[in-house]
Length: 136
Image 1 (cartoon, rainbow, N blue to C red):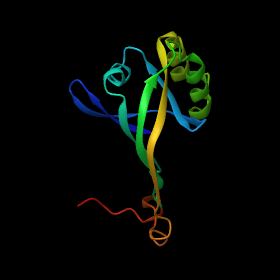
Image 2: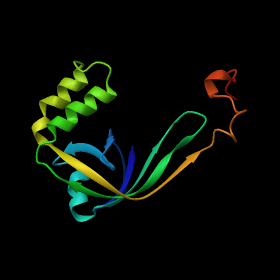
Image 3: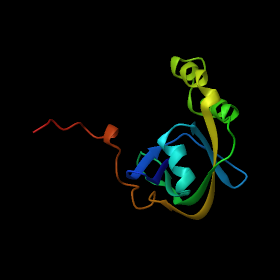
Image 4: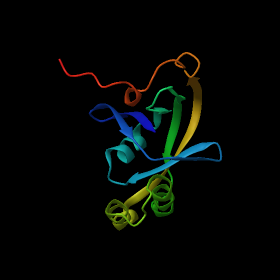
């Protein structure tokens, strides 16, 4: 998920791991992060959840964000399970070592739209399927 938000220094796009349940998006971030600090002052965000591969499809929308719990450890553990194939990796251990600093973030969706370009891109080949072109 990519989130666009207003910070003290201007607009920022932040990529995040997320889950969806109970009609909301959920994530976590360090309490001291620009993301968590900015949401306290500017909770309205825009977001995009989409594929990076052809055919392009996804959802985008707006949400009101709220940092709920001072401890996002449980959410972090669930996100590690979802996104990492090895929950005992160096990255997982590093993230968990600072888990007591994580805040749980609920993203209440206020507007949502989706797109699916499958039909209009059905004859477009992925870059990996095309013959590589030599550089100019």
